[in-house]
Amino acid sequence: MNKRILKILKRSRSIVISSSGFSFRTFYALYYGFLFITNDKKLLDELTSSTVVNFIIEDKKSEKRYITGKGRVEILGSPLNYKIERGILLFKVPEYTLLLNDYNSIIVRIVPEKDLQFYDLTEGYRVITDSVDIDSLKEDINPIKKYFYALRPWSLQMSVADIVLGALISPYFNILKLILSAIAVVLLQAGANLLNSFFDFRSGIDKPINVPPSGSRALVDNLIPLRYYMLYVFLVMSAGIFLGAYLILLYPKVLIIGALGIVAALTYSIPKYGLKWLALGDLAVFLIWGPGIVLGSYILQGGSLTSPGPVFLSIGLGLIVTAVLHSNNWRDIKSDASQGVKTIAYFLGQKGSMIYYLALIWFSFIFIGISVIYDARLLPLLGSFLTIPWAIKLTKIALDEKNWKRMILDALTAQFQSLHMYFSLIFLIGYIIALHLIFH
Image (cartoon, rainbow, N blue to C red):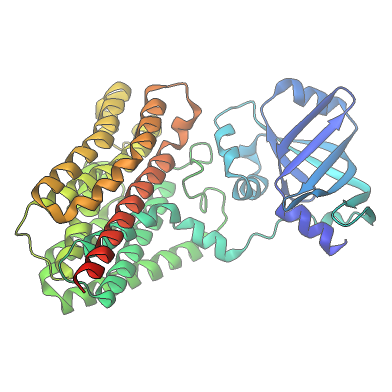
């Protein structure tokens, strides 16, 4: 096949499919044709009765380039019964995860027939006709991406932001300490994420039907073979423990915080005995990502707790990260309970979990405000209050049990946490620069 056409098919995500009587747009992935998932019974009936359909795929980079053709319809079946197709689809289009809970969802494949027409209107009018090579219609799933996504990278920024903020509020600053501590904490959290996914998979908590778009599907969709996955866990966790132990040896004053962090990372999700299983997950996450990382970074840089300001700040930040975890546990109450996992969300129930979530979000602002009262140096952190509109949006989602965004509330809360930290860091860095310019 024409390399340019194939490149467009691989980088684009949406396809318009039509025939006499119907037309619709959907997301697709390549696997011996164009795969998509639908739970629309009427549409499935139309597709079943159609022998051939037309399709149009616009270039993701320019709507003036598009590909057209005809294809036959193959109704495959439930996504739960097609592991390879499901894995390819959800890797490219994680939004389809939301349809897996619907037992009416079906994987459909459009197999192109004969020739494809490529229209390029960017420079005049040009049409290229190319014959179809079905075997080449496969996604290029980059191995690096598979291993990277398995880390749940969206969650790692929480650790980095905590480390940086703790370092910046210290009266002393050492860039090498900051870099080493940030790498160590990120490796430990990444290793803990990998271990958590492994234990949830082996204990039956994670199933194809309930892993959200924000979760790791590396094991449930067999994107990474188990033996390679375990080697990956060992390498990442070992690197984090080694670097963490090295920092503790160099700076013994962070021994307790560092050691507790390493132990928590290793024991958090062990089936039946881990912190997660004993309703201690929220407390562990709060202590690690609140006082643990923030104050650990602060002390590592040379700061001393002569004022309660940094402590109140760390509490506020810990509450937000706990909200990220709780939103995940709140969504998974039923699946966790069926496997014997007792989270705070399980004991609180739906209404109690909603109140608890809102308390975590809004009390974080209160504690940050208190920290400023005790320590005027933290005044720039009030810039985080600019995220209140996002907090209001999260509140509306939490209050509306019919809102589909509740399924991804953990990822939305993590985005809120990131904005919260970014605003804090920007204002704090600006404040430090201003002081430097004034007094130097």
